[in-house]
Length: 94
Image (cartoon, rainbow, N blue to C red; front, side, top):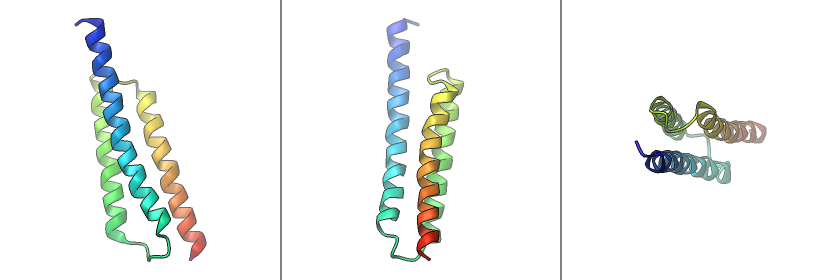
């Protein structure tokens, strides 16, 4: 495969994964902005499902050689930090 095409696929894969991660980050931000509302189990389930889906996308991209495992771990770690902040902030306000 042409090196330029291969790099293009890698760039596209990373861009798509980051876009999906940003959507999850927006869900987290909305929840952080509305902490006065009771914690919603459905919302948490949606977040968990989105995180699981993203982790599977990342694993697929790694297996195809489109991204490095470390790049995927960084994307997930960033979101996990935001989720942790959400839980800490909510717990502190109880």
